[in-house]
Length: 239
Length: 160
Image 1 (tube, rainbow over the protein chains, first blue to last red):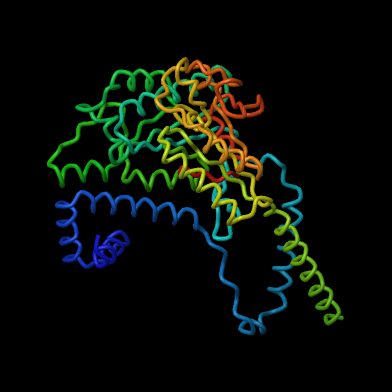
Image 2: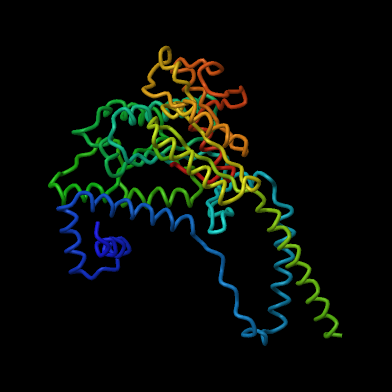
């Protein structure tokens, strides 16, 4: 790929192109599946980066600017700080354990979400059309749901199928329509989710009208969804 | 009188900031990371082991709690080539001499390699004979569940 193309690719993913440029780029992507794949991957990477660097530390106040601030405000912040430190001390340990952590720029953890209870929540991200991989995934998910049910431990599982992984939920391609239906019937805490971006892309680029298995839910974007779930404290497993 | 109060408050704030800063320093003691391996492509596994070494180089082995969780085809990373004959469902067994050396090297630096019990059982693996440098402590009941548990304990997830 030429470097000007690479610039375009970044600008496209960031939504910085003009409407004309965007149309041109979409045209180029249609003729060049490799370019389309790169755009998709770059989009994913950027979404993951946004998650990893979510809520960065606030910028330090420039010195001097606020020297004249009222003593009352400073006293209030001091008291709040002391209260915060004491509250931190008194918090029970299990709150700590339930925190979901991603790394910040310095490699330290951040805590964007806390699980409300001890429910285990896992989002599986399927981007692969290989039926063997899908079979293994369904085995794993079923085994886990059954084990948690037997022990009366709360569990929620989502399978997000996106890009080539959408094959699992397409009526014409899936090898496991019946199995998916049985699993969805048996476990109300299991959800199959399809990516609308992928569905739209198939229509625009290849003229395919996707028909999903009846148990599939549709969300705006698979990547956005797995990012959102991680922010909410779900564990993430890339299939 | 108010002047003394101001001094007192300033002192208190200073103390609180100092305490907070100390707490933050001790809180970031170790970076926790779990690497997820479930594929059997030898090239990808060599790459993954290299990723891990680079990760250690960047952060320092004393600042890192790094686990590798293997399940499904991913067990091929520690599967000895002779085991292919009697195990079920494996196409590759990648623990040749070179990979063994790489694993040894990472273990010396504190990396833990975890093996999924479901895979061991389901694929007729005799763990103590078929897996390189295996010990009972390396077994976890379910690879997938282990990944979820570790993430809920604050481990960052990386799939190479």
